[in-house]
Each structure stands twice: as C-alpha cells, then as structure tokens.
Length: 77
Image (cartoon, rainbow, N blue to C red; front, side):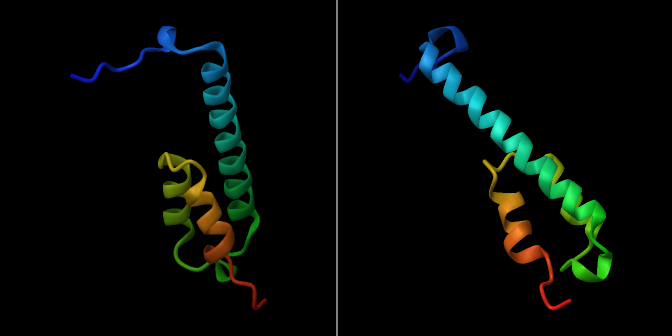
C-alpha cells in the first residue's frame, strides 16, 4: 500500500521547493497571457481564445506557456 504524503509530512525544504515551483509557473503563465493579449491575432498561430484558455487553466509545469512562446507566435512579421 502506498501512503500519500500530506503537506505536514513534507520537510521544510520540500515545502519550499513546491512553493517556488508554483510561483515560477504562475509568473510564466502571466507573462504568456500578457504577451498573448498584446499580440495581434495575425501574429498568433491558432485562435487567441484557445491559447489563452489552455495557458490559464492547464497545470503543465510551464510546458504550455513554453509551447506558446516557441510555437504559438509567428516570427515572420
């Protein structure tokens, strides 16, 4: 049987790392959403509303915002 660890069972260092990860993911999401809002629709690959929804909702450890920055923006303008 595997026992799930609870917050109180984590060490102080483990708690700190989780908090840092959550804050970093939040910052990256905010940067991606800000860029998406300011960028004209013709400079975005795909619908802006879809990118915004996925970036805002998905827990992705930063992968969705990184995908937006790498693949979602057109560079030919």
